Amino acid sequence: MRKWLPLAAVCLGTFMLLVDVTIVVVALPDMARSLHTSFSDLQWVMDIYALALAALLLGLGSLADRIGHRRVYVAGVAVFALASLACGLATDPAVLIAFRGVQGVGGAAMLATTTALVARLYHGRDRGVAFGVWGAVSGAASAAGPILGGLLTEYLDWRWIFFVNLPISVLAIVMTLRYVQAPADGAARGRGMDLPGMAAFTVAAGAVTYALIKGTDYGWTSGATLGLFGLGALALLVFLLIEPRRAQPMLDLALFRRGSFTGLMITAVLLSVAAFSYLAYTSLWLQSVRGMGPVTAGLACLPMSAASFVVASLGGRFLHGVSPRFTLGVGMLLIGGGALLMTVIGAGSTWTVLVAGFAVAGVGVGLSTPALASTAMAAVPPQRAGMASGAVNTARQLGNALGIAVLGVVFHAGLSAAVRDHGGGVSADALAGGQAGPLIAHTAPAQRGAVQEMVHVAFADGLRDVFWVSGALGVLGGVVALALVRRPTAPARATRADVPSVSVAGTRG
Image (tube, rainbow, N blue to C red; front, top):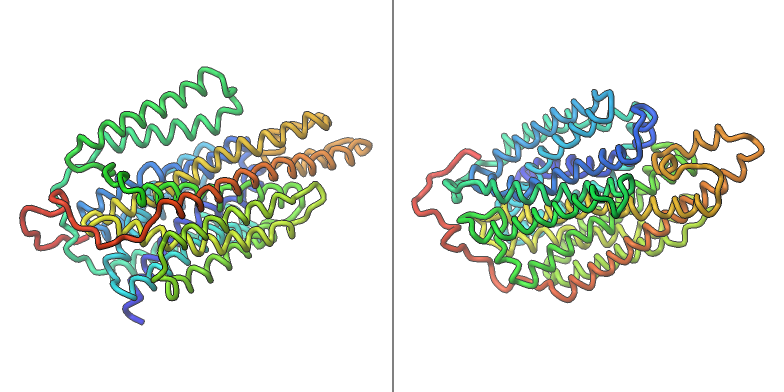
């Protein structure tokens, strides 16, 4: 059992940082009441964390290649713990959003190094088992977030979704320092950081996500919204021009000449959008419209969490010989199919309408997640493991950040159309901000029944549109994976840039 203790240390951090992507979803109504937030505030509480992960993963992965994967991982856990404490103590939305961003910085340092550590620590069949366990933890963590968030919110307080990270962080640091050895991680030592590339990529991701979130407020054709989209496009162009000219780029764009690597990145983006981004909006419906508590709303997601954990665990043992083309392709088709199953939602539906879709999507997550990580690691030499880990996880988290924003636009549009068609004097912004219950309670008794019916119809319409978009993107991801992803024909070989010119005895990582 001792050989699996390093994996346990890595999985602790992985579980914690990925749970925090979705753990807030069932706490949103309580946060809204406690901190008097708007709909855009709630989006930013979720999105700033995923955005920080997406923007910094590549850069921190490159830094880890340079100074040591273990060192960056431990530092990330420490930053994550301190930021979690600050989030739990926040007294207004701005402070909470700011420290959620800092949480994302720590999470990026962890996520950029976890798969690199697993790939270095295990080999042969053990590596397949290790990635299966890591994938099970990763897939289950995002789906388990609402369940854990519900338990903590209902029986303690929404602030405990952040405080609970403190003891887990301490345990992860102690186990990592004790059981994860620090070998010669210095193969990339002496490389400079790609600061221009990091800056350009961060601006691109931030500007586009901000434009998607604030477009409803500013207007989609307003100068502010178009300017933000333009800034994002310009920053992305600058990034694409910078990277080929850097001696040690944050992302080696030559990898995208391989159709398989391109397919992996597209699949990673679409996986997060199709499987997880809609959870925030289903949670609002379950609590503010169906009247469920945080625990029962979180438990509604149990079929996804359980299915993804079981399938990923078994897949690491029994599917390591299967081509990633099929595990990724079939997994994404199941994710899309799960979302499409939930499009039957109607005004009179209860939480049971989600069960079959969550279960099918969970099977897809369990198949896809381990294959994404292991195939990406096989695409590069070991000296660039941090870059590969950062690339695939950047794609996933960028997909989640953009998915929350895009699906938020779709959800809000569905609410607005229903409110406009049925009247009743209710604001779509208020409904999207989790205020359905108070609005109905404060309506005159003679009109309460009509307003309640309108709220049920509006949420059903908004969620149905969200599930259609998620399902279509999941199916698209499956088609892309089946068409482009191939099994690596041989282990990736180091290039001249990956091999140090002098012998390095080792560095404490």
